[in-house]
Length: 112
Length: 118
Image: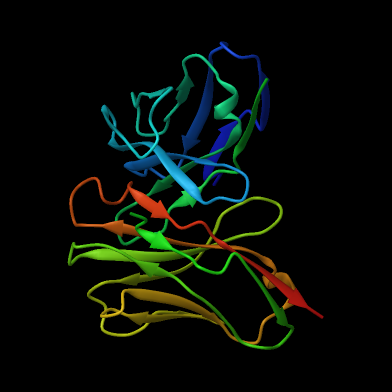
């Protein structure tokens, strides 16, 4: 069981570039989320999904898009990267509201 | 207003001592859940313990227990007999409500860095 996988592990972008952070889970979880973690801070919710075809905004959605065409995949798109988006990005999935979230290993993004 | 407050940015504890990490929360929803996660220096997020707002007893998982004081809106993590491997960041988190989206909308505190001294 791979759990939650994220690619790439590390990425450097120039301001204005776009990219997609990939997230996949093989646990058949309906609920998935994207977080960012800035140095010395907790995780902040960017976008989340409650099932294929259903997504919604979290605390800090600006500059990011998501889609959920399958249960397994939940990619996060940066539309036009800015230095303020330098962060570690975590994807998570869960079976339900009383269950823990399973986190991916994170993607470290540096925007120059 | 912050929904999850962790007032201890850092703590030092002697090995084998018990340690309490503070967490207070703010919600008007009667149904909510509280989580604690550990993040070692390697960066992964490790689930430790969960407490539901309607749970009658405080949650326990091995050396971890959650001191849940509903009226005070506090959910402190207690680690008994601390070990060197407990050195990490610890995050308190909350989900609110019973709606369809509540499983995905987890809000995190800013964390406490725990360092265990040998």
